[in-house]
Length: 149
Image 1 (cartoon, rainbow, N blue to C red):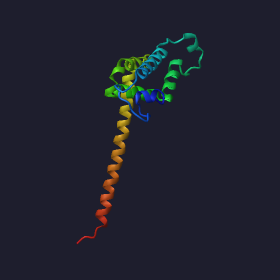
Image 2: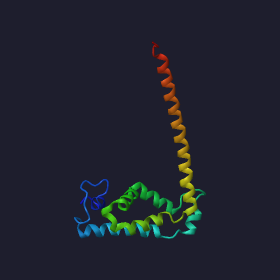
Image 3: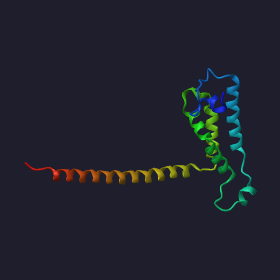
Image 4: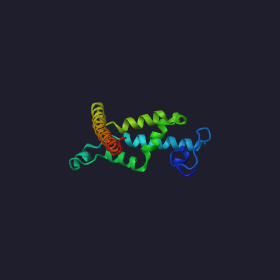
């Protein structure tokens, strides 16, 4: 196989594999990688190291999350969470996602989601209104250009 992505059959793998076709060592490799990610995210923050950084500096947890994002691991986790044939990894993925959001309060996440959705909705509404006005102006211009009989 071409590495762990090939074993999982993720978006970048050249030959997707069903879990029935995987070898036992591929299954163990996937499980060990998921457990490693979980364990890394489970490490509690070190208060002394967290306070040494400049205000607004990213915490160690945030830097680990950024590294996971840059490596594409977040896309792989989304694939494992959404693929019907990968249900055997659901609890590992759920635990990892829970640890990814451990520093966030549910209220903050809900407010962030609503704020972004509200702002995007407002932009979309304005954009649609602009397009509608442009279309009406074009119709009027065409109506004025037609010769009357």
